[in-house]
Image (cartoon, rainbow, N blue to C red; front, side, top):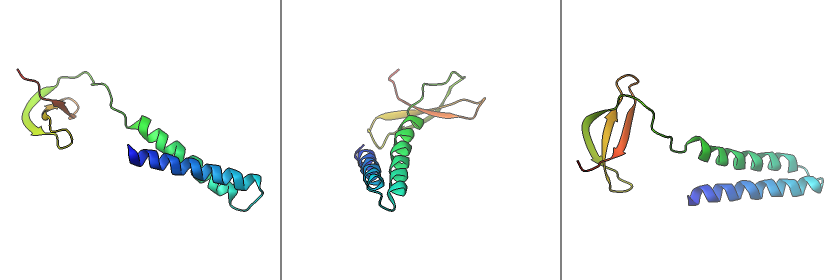
Length: 95
C-alpha cells in the first residue's frame, strides 16, 4: 500500500511540475505532464484491473492440497475446475 501511494504521489507531483513548466513556457513541460499523467493513470488502473474477483460458477473439486498462506498464516485448500483447468485457493473451513 505504501509503494502504491508513493508512486501515485510521484506521478501527481511530476504532472504538476510539468503543468507549471508548461505554463511558464519552459521546455520539457509537456513531456513531464504527460509522463506524470501516465504514471498516475496507470497506477490507478492497476488497482482496478487486479482487484479480487467474485468466484466463478463451476464444478469445483477439492484436490486435497493444503498449505499455509505465507502472508496471513491461514490454512488454505486448493479447488480445481476440470472444465476450465482453473485452480482456486480458499481458506480452509473446519468440517
